[in-house]
Length: 165
Image 1 (cartoon, helix red, strand yellow):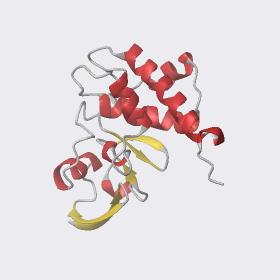
Image 2 (cartoon, helix red, strand yellow; image 1 turned 90 degrees about the vertical axis):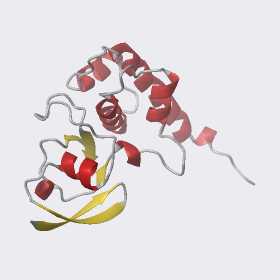
Image 3 (cartoon, one colour; image 1 turned 90 degrees about the horizontal axis):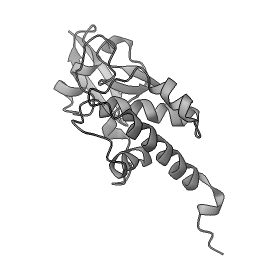
Image 4 (cartoon, helix red, strand yellow; image 1 turned 180 degrees about the vertical axis):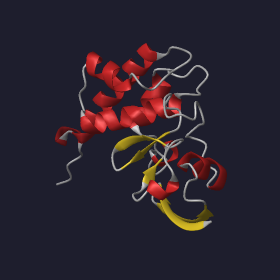
């Protein structure tokens, strides 16, 4: 066992674990986070996706010894009790059916919008193509990403900020 310090969603955690333990197991079993899910265990489906250093990372194949930067999970997107615009768009567009893949869909979409705040439909499909959905809600995912992009652009606009004189 090794002593591992892991910062997740802004909170540091000290854990005793094997260095080869998958990050997903630590997040779910030790820290009680339910966003990232075990899907395929091979890093192919995306259900376990977290964000590390601005990269959508498959936590099921990432050993905790490889994690040197802060990890953001689905639970870390909301701030001050307010959902992130992507999370709200998912609700507004009623994206989930079974909900199993939604962690991966949302986290991958977050990285996309951080890198490209106004993606085309083609760019969305290309970016999201490795995050699998058994219920086939891909068109609703695409619509939700576009909705979130508009909301995020409006929130960032200087015209949307209140000016107090």
